[in-house]
Image 1 (spheres, protein in one colour):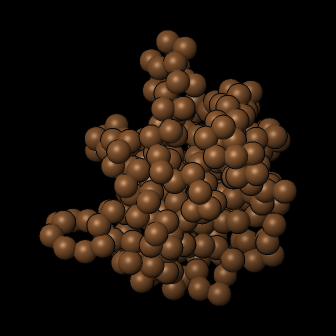
Image 2 (image 1 turned 45 degrees about the vertical axis):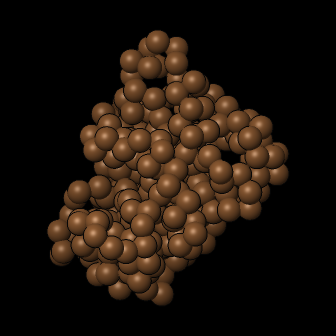
Image 3 (image 1 turned 60 degrees about the vertical axis):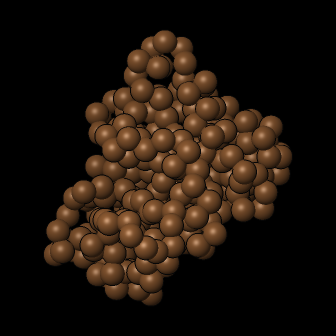
Length: 251
Ligand code: PGA
């Protein structure tokens, strides 16, 4: 049985006061929930204050990215050890905004995945096709390519630290959610692919989240799909009530 996992990706939102208030609101709403793993991923600069707000709760902390080097002359970057210092458990890697706005490649994401796992973080590894790729019937090829390259060299026991998030780019922040059937089709393909490149027990244990305009009103139908094990939530994670409602729906 895979335990559902719902993570909130706050992206470049909140400020020092609203970040802490949002975290405290989520903690307050979710006091009795222990059947779902929950994480929030604030901007780097609020990790420590959000960590304090989450302390002694069952809500974990994640970051939105990490660099693969341990330290040195990498202006503007953050290492795994720095994230661990800030009490992070998870790190989002390969998010579509990092791929398509900031130009991250599959090779870079692979290095980050390896570094994150070696550094004791649990990656949420994002994949997903653009609208023109879906329209051209290339969804499966694109997602397969991203997974094969992202996980290159990682198909051993280390892979168990990874959650995959399938996020069709056309559904992110657009209000246009993939249908449950569209999500299930790709999730099933991903699980089959993991079974092929790793093995079936790894594939059966791996949690695959859906992301892209997930919200309280579509949580139940998405989570009812057999291969949808959780959600990576952007916009709806910025309201404690909406995010908590989604988690309670799953719990
Ligand atoms: P959204 O973002 O829920 O606002 O569509 C999801 C994501 O980018 O992780």
